[in-house]
Each structure stands twice: as structure tokens, then as C-alpha cells.
Amino acid sequence: MLEDSIKYQLQGDDWLKRVGIGGLVVILGIFVVPLFTFQGYMLEVMRRVLGGDTATPPEWDELDLVEATVDGLRYLLVVLPYTIGALLVAMIPAAIVAVLGVASGNEGLFFLAVLIAVLCYFLGLIAVAVAVPVATANFVRKDSVSAAFDLDVLRTLVTNRTMLVAVLLAFAVNIIASAVGSALGFTIIGLLAVPWVQFVFQSAIFYVWGSGFADAYEEEYGEPPLDRGTDVSSGDPSAPAEGTF
Image (cartoon, rainbow, N blue to C red; front, side):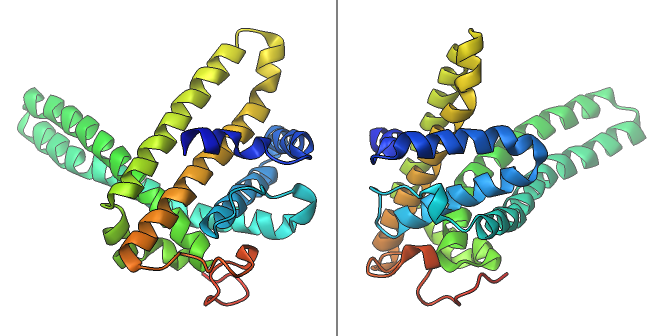
């Protein structure tokens, strides 16, 4: 899966055009709105993989860019609660211990609070790293923000071995991307290529998440997350035609 994910955007006769546009969208992200378009494209990558199509990456001229941008914005409503939740898990216990330390004048409690904050922070990162891929895929599957917080799906799939392997593989893709980006950064020409590399590897991460979720979902529920016989661009065949919150 790792090799297939990295090669995903290099498929087809128009791969150079597709990757070229993708890199430009990354660069235009400095204007904020294209960031949501970029994220919406990644969600479409996942949607296709969930539907069993791993051979035809989305072409930019086939996408409704407004819809993709809106999807990217909606995805922010998925990621933010998980991120904020992880921060709260890290900060609240530490804050309580710190207040007790200040109130009692015990410096040891203050340093203990720092250690607790660091420990909880890393635990929160691990929890988010496992939960967000599942939440993202279920959001795409149902085309609904609320589906990202479906406790039944979360409880079932975050502990599924196939999904956990996919999370680790996506982490490996991220490490490879960072290494490639760092290596390219040593030259001006290489540095200029980073946005295109980022596009390819970000697609790879969503490919791995989608593939892992699809396999894990079928293992747990006995059916694919999306009907292989339907147009995957429309999301879950049982979901409304329009995205819902």
C-alpha cells in the first residue's frame, strides 16, 4: 500500500498536468481560500479510494471547485474539535496541578504540572492521530460533518488492526515527505519543488487513510463503505444528494 499511495498521483497520461495544478494550489494557499480547495481535493481522493477506485486520481478540470472548497471548509469543522479536545486533555489536568502548586507554594507541584502537560499532550496527539483518519473517512462516506463524531464507528475502527496499520503507514508517508522536503530544501530549485512534493505526499496520506478505512470497515461491518457500483463522487449512496452537517 505504501508504494501504491506514493505513486497514486503519478498515474494516467495527464499526471504531470494534475500534479502541476496541485502544486500551484498549494502555493496559492497563502491566500487562505485555496487551502480549503486543496483540502477538498484530498477528500475527493479519499472518496474515490473508499469507492474502490485507486487507479484514476481526480482531475482538476472535472471537479466543481466551489464544492471542493466548501467541502474543505466543512472538514475544518471535523478537525478543529479533535484538535481542541486534545489540547484540553493536555492542559486541564496540568492546570489543576499547577494551581494547587501555586496555592501551596510547592514548586515541585508546578514542575509536576509541566510533566503532566507534556505526557497528556503526547497522549492527545496519539489519540488524534488514530481518531482523525477514521473521522475523516466516515465524514467522506456519509458526506456529513456529524458522521465524523459517530461513536459507534469510532469505537469499532480505531481499534481495528487494519486501520491501525494504515495510520502507521500514513505516519511513514509523512516521515518520507518530511525527509524529501528537507533534502530538497538544500537547493533553491529543490525548495521551489516542495509544493508539488507536498501535493503528491498529501494525496498519498489520504489514499492510505481511505484504503485502510475501506478494508477495516468491510472487516467489521461485512460491506464496503461505499457501493462499488455507484458514482463515488456523490458519497454514500444512502446519504442525501447534498452534503449535510
